[in-house]
Length: 225
Image (tube, rainbow, N blue to C red; front, side, top):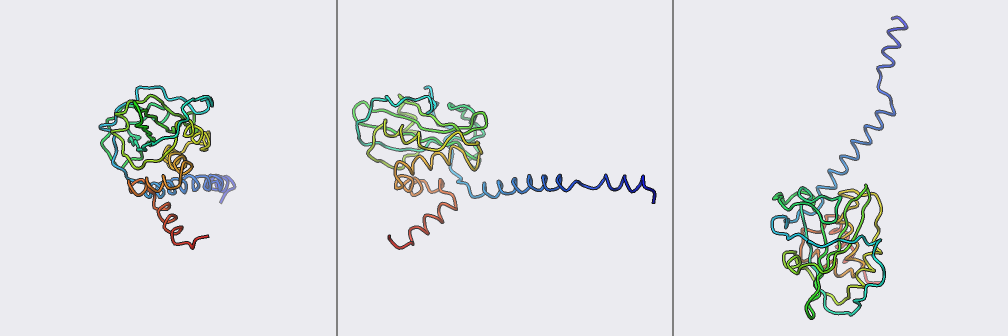
């Protein structure tokens, strides 16, 4: 066999680095598929969720001067919209036309304070420029709350909620499965109160992942400290 043929055969061999890179891509894709199989399958509100019609302000652009710090009853609800009809790069989202209830969804927390004339707020996160960003909207139409899925009532105030929302990690790399509006929502509720997150899971079971369910059950079996 000539050296020319040997060289041709050698250079036609796959590059080990290329093989490893492709394997890494395939492994990551397989991991994402596996993780997505454990994601909640929640009936979407895409067909009847009213638009916010108000500006969503990024948390990083909110000052600390928000004046409403009167503690009172606050009702919490979950607003879910299919990503197929939701533009994850904008806080307002896109059109609400999707009917597939098994797609990955955008989540937002709707908080309604019924006292007096009532006030409604929305807290949510979205992907922008490859990063997870978060914001809030005030003076939201009460219909947004009424069309969302109610899950619990706690005593708090808008200023406190804004401060807690700012504590939730953001500006990390956006990932529709690993770091998204859903993971942000869970952390936000947990920081307000672990019981509030538990109420979400118990009232809307489809919101709980398989892994969080196992963790919660294992923790309930642990002896008290």
